Image (cartoon, rainbow, N blue to C red; front, side, top):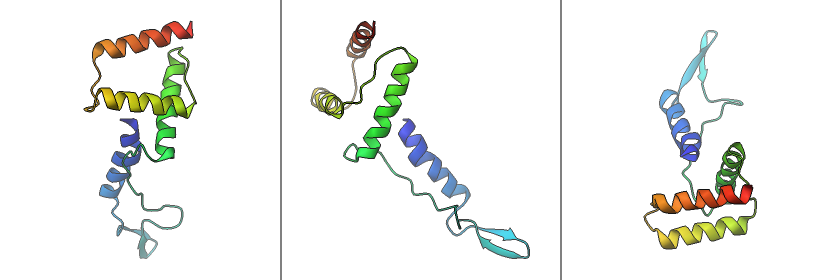
Length: 112
């Protein structure tokens, strides 16, 4: 959800407020809004095949785990196995409450 917020929703909102052809007044003349260090944003959607997208998700998950006193993981093989297993079990990406609760409890047990 955060990935979409940061890399799709916010850039789309910026483009709605300041379209690429937007100009601003600079003294007596009008100049393009998107110039110099202000570049036109390019919204992106999450793609699990793009390493930087996965890295963002893993980093965010590890930060959240740390905030709750859980151990995170930086091993990409572990993440790939988890993703493949979840995809095979739940093609609609819906997780049962029992499965999520059990996984969270196992993570808490390992952290202690």
